[in-house]
Image (cartoon, rainbow, N blue to C red):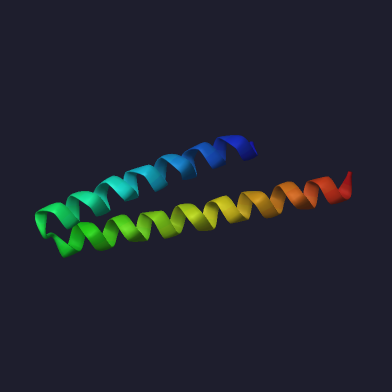
Length: 60
């Protein structure tokens, strides 16, 4: 389950980077901001999954 969520978070991070780059290239502050927000969301999801993994290791 954890790896599935990490893959989704990675995909969202990539999507965010692309959208941020697009926004920067076209001068669209909205796209740039939305892209950055997606990257932050992806980072939070990665951290959450890492905590879950470490908790599971500690309990085993």
